[in-house]
Length: 231
Length: 392
Image (cartoon, rainbow over all chains, first blue to last red):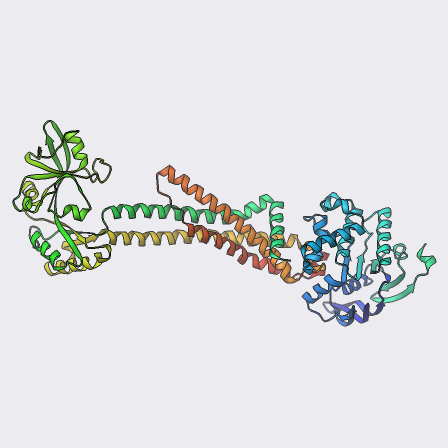
């Protein structure tokens, strides 16, 4: 599903260089639930940008769904993002001028899905996050937890195989955070691959596998047992 | 992302910040409104002038001889010969001898009017018709008869309900017999075309003690032959007179052309000024769009992360700019037409809003939106998704 092979991302600032990703090798299978954990500056954000096709590596290969995405042009990356990835951000990143329906509809518009089919897909997706009664609300009229559920619906609307969640509970209280995590687990059970980026070890425990980054290198990669998972 | 969606989105973002949208549009509104207003007023003015020249008769050619003192070397006979030599272009000619402020008296009624001497061709040349009686004849002219034909205004002033035919009136003290009445031409108003007394030009020269005749009116066979007739007249004139200072040849259709040409130039200059205002309006739009792109950096990042391509972002912003400017254009058109009619009725001017001006003004405002929206839109489209997402 996702393959990072000898991946380097090096930023040059003046004469010094910063190795944000320093030779990463990572394989994620279909239907996995992986948490990428690390302190700030560990390279986890850069790693997420790579997996999210938002950035291209300095060297190495990034293979997503059998396609090498490391040498693609911007518009081709846009297309891959649209077809294979669903993003969930810490700050929800809903467009404030659009209502719930229109926000969830956006990825389908960019994919060029026909109108009636689009409506059906948006409704299905909102049903999965249990927000069908909020369809015409503006994001500002919703609570943080509801907004995050809208953004999950948006990530799901195009049925992408991979969901990429960047600190999805970071802006939520622990109770709604737990609800969001539960929702992610459910989505994972329904067949989506989930990559969760977090600095919080406790949240990472909710995943099936933890990959720990430090200074651009993987320092730990462990699959969690059922017992640990239920902790 | 198709045009319709971009358009709906653009309308939404215009409605979202009404004051800013209005101020952005203001330049376009003023530019378009002033184009429409100026063009409407100028074409109204041109139509008025054309109408007044046309009422003079577009076939009409006036010749004025200033001569050198008393040495006039062209007489009515020679002018008549000139007309007969060019039958394909010149239809008729009449000498005109005007006695301004002539006192006309019938019994106890008297008035001041213009008394003009002509030959029998006058009605044909001036497009006048005789309502009752007859016009001055060839014989009246030859025999210097004291006959006259009066305009409808003079008839109303002197005769009220009586029939004037066969009555004697006194012009500057000399008795003339009224033989006809001219049909009303210009609402029978004072000092209009109906405030006139016509007599044989031979009698008029005697009455005014002017032996030389300096004014002639020619009529061309049609509007198309005016130029040819003028050529023939000018040729004859240049044979007789050594310099064009001694005579002038003027035609209403030529004057009309000159008026139209002048109005065209004036329109062009004013439209040029208005175009500068449209340009400034366009720069205003570009300025606001650049601000808008910066403000919406995050939105652009989100859209890109969801799969928007460059062209999607590009079209969103270009359509938004074009929508802003074309909404401004429509408001400007409405404002321009309304204020043109307002000013028209206030100053009693004819207003002719031109359909083409409206179409052109609208297209120009759309084009301005697209042109000045392009640069900000391109800036937005080129944003890198990570940088855009990182921005707060």
